[in-house]
Image 1: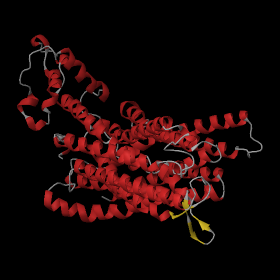
Image 2 (image 1 turned 45 degrees about the vertical axis):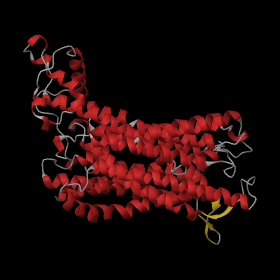
Image 3 (image 1 turned 90 degrees about the vertical axis):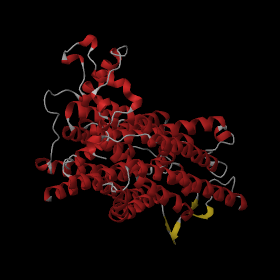
Image 4 (image 1 turned 180 degrees about the vertical axis):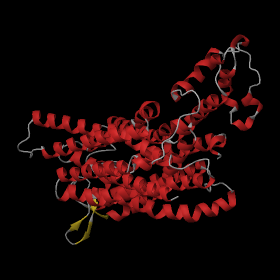
Length: 529
């Protein structure tokens, strides 16, 4: 028990430091692109979404390397070193940015190359760090022990709280330094925190639990599960006989995936073991296929989630941001409200709502993870509705004061109008993102749990890329800055409200499909859900 508490503190510290480092870059990246690098709003938003998307998709590759070859511990160490290198080069690129009068096309191109190389090196580092640290932390709980399995559910809640604390710290401290002092220092401080994250992780190496492979012949889990699909395809013409899975439905074989049960058949009545797959292998393959529809429907949540680091920030930059005479807050600082909502709501959810719902539903987690995800998706849809209404109000205020063509003039409307959409997105995160983490971790085979957490990240990544594509297409169709683009660099002439309404519709459709898919989903018996 005491050892687990030490582990929790170590992993919480690692996550706070790493998220501080990542969001020290990500939270105000659009301001750096439209400022020192001189990009337009649409191009900068597309670049931020593209980087954020790739950063969230690459963990699938990092998790594959960890689960198939290196193991989680070694992957975390190597990824952390790459992470530190990328952030060091990013700091160097900010130091080398010349003043406008000194810049030339050649120096600008070289600096852009160094900047984006560094940025994507950070993405590569995160690809091994993010899924493996969380999976490794959850591995410290014994799922065969009832109490530890329940504690593992709480681990995901408190992990997300730690992550949010790191994000809040980055937004409050780093964003202010970037805008008030300089970008080089603003990128350098996160680099130092990433080094701290690595040191903290290494300190606990002697006391960690390291997951063991399946007993018996050790086989690469991807080879083992991939063989199920291959054998089932080879046996596709064989007559279906009652298999062990069909005779015992409690094993969790889904009726619609009975095709995979043919991997249990021996062709031509062969008794050679090499020609058939085990029941557990077929169960694992079936479970992975069953996750695909759930993963696809969560993209309806990922699209609204992608907006807070881009258009929410640009909205805030046009509003009145003075909180005290002479003190103006950076617009990106409002992102801290998402973290505050998470920090406040996680303890309430974990210590109050879960015990109450547990006494009603008899579920160890209070409510099922899919119900938790769906509730968050409802909130995300409402967030886009609120954001659209606030943006309509902002544009109307700009018209009333004759500021439509005054892009640099502050719209006489308080930035606090944006508070509801940030808080609502924070509450949605506690429900959907934490639910996705626990769901994908628990529903994949034990050896593939890094992949499970990478799946949740990849959904956010694909959502960011889809958002980037959507922005680019809409900007092209509506004429860019020269026309009536929804994303005109002069936001008073833009129509972010139309975009938010579109996202609300997409999110609502995604929610409807998610509810349909989740009704027929069968939880894996191995986790006892």
